[in-house]
Length: 434
Image (cartoon, rainbow, N blue to C red; front, side, top):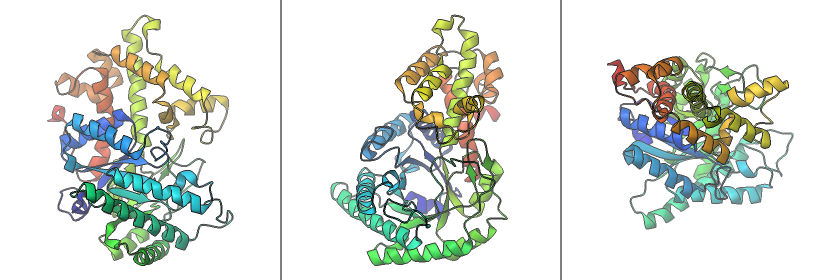
């Protein structure tokens, strides 16, 4: 049985899972160390625009990403059975400016590459219009379902090919739906987000099931349906989960058990909101930007420590300035997200919830600055840790956590992971608290 089906059956001892959607090696390491320490099943996902057969914005193919993630898993000592690798928004997302035949051809190659690389949680996203779809009308759910079923067939054909080389390869599970929040959070201010209507979910469920049946795809391969439960974030706002507004939607889910909901854009939700979501059947929580936001916070806090520790300004890392230089040199990853005065945009580039600076972290100049920062922070004085990393201070003085910069950064990211793990029924372990 697929690990996620085991979790959702109640046999695993955890109520749900959270999915870490990132290609950042430090965040991946933190997530895998956290899962190892606390003994739960975690999902690690790459996104279509980030990782695809043409390299995506990271320059990685699905096989490249799997190699990176597997290397980190082994270095973290996380057992293979505790991690599920997934593909997020797999479909024509990256090629939506093309006409549907060409876009779907690319989408088919994309899901084939992910499946052949060993990803076993496949989110099929056909919710976006393409160049030959009517730009003035919502995309018909019948069209979404037909395209999704065609891609599901490609997944299962690729899996059959994979099994010829690896007979013990895990059969993939699928996530579907047509009301899918935009990847990376909202691009414009919103006053509220309306949950998917129960009758709309029921209609989508029926139409997708019929489309899968026509393609000969067992609907048992579908474990989750993406809906909008009423959560979202943008550059300066977060809409928390309101279980009363989502009550009708979640009641409709109980009619099609054991299917679960997958919640996107759950970044920055409170512990109470996340716990309520899992209790209500939204048992896959997707998170990404808030973890790189946590990484950015930790890097900037460590740079504050560096300013005290290193008196020679020329020997300091200059990390924040390196980030700004890269963002000013190439505005394509943040220009459509940040609006306002020059002062407001300057603030948002570094501190926005949208966390668009995460796209720039792999740049050579930022990487070099981060490496110098860590080299300057081999041992951070404990008083500075108390000042800038108060949550880590107790763990350091107890001897459980190292006082070097990388240990502080990883543990700061784990503070965010604690919230998601707790919502999924895991009690995070911190020896310093016992």
